[in-house]
Length: 332
Image 1 (cartoon, rainbow, N blue to C red):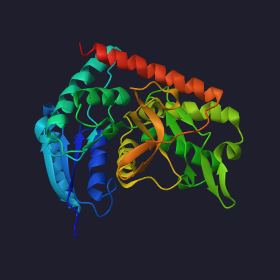
Image 2: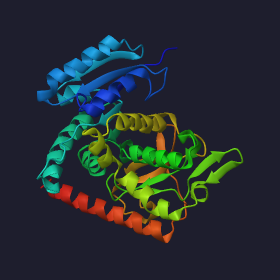
Image 3: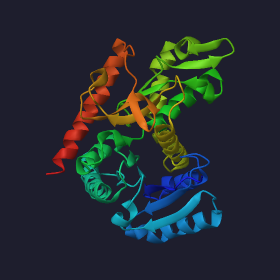
Image 4: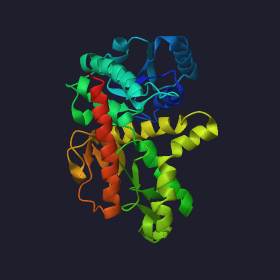
């Protein structure tokens, strides 16, 4: 029997990431090759014509899984009955802007979108925040959509996770699919901590620890971490545009694993609501290693944390605490 279509909202759908993301969703990359979808695309009024152009292209591509397209500048229409919301739209930091200015703009955007999701989304709607500052935008959304369970609100650190896998793969000259269980701890910012202490690589002789195979702590503690932390800036420098293809692909990975489950023995990184695990302050949206099953994520527990890692986990938590205070000051 054919599956019922899932309604997927993409905000900022006429933008770069949106333009890369919507065909992936329509092709089944996010929810699987047998799951029909209805795309809801939202953007701001000045982008209405470009948004309509994206809708025209989706029609022209004749995706078999795409059962309908809603393209709108009306937040209520966009959010009505959606099962999954991918929040790509946000206010970018511009030259000369203070962090508080960016935060107050995003607080206003996320307050309005959270209220619409709260009132009009389908029950048990899953929300992924992509727009920066992603962790804190997700926290604001949670604040203004109190009936959406905290376990249903997450932010994207899968892009950083995938970047870390890619760096290890290139360093060891192995397929990226053979590398697993890197971790991104903390904020989707330059304080994030890419951690390979528990990561492994599939070899002909069985799984081997990344740290032993790399056999270069100087690289792992230095260049590896800074490359992953600053990869977004490096791409902007090279392309003169921010990451779009990789961000869209990792958003699909995030939702697919969340909905369909992670492979046995594998974890992924998701920005989720902290319950105090690993001595991270409760009440932050913080990136942890998680496994997913039956549409639910669970933080991987009991991993040993060495002194260097502890310091880095605390540093990124401090930044998130400051961001949270800044965001809440914009609410008053």
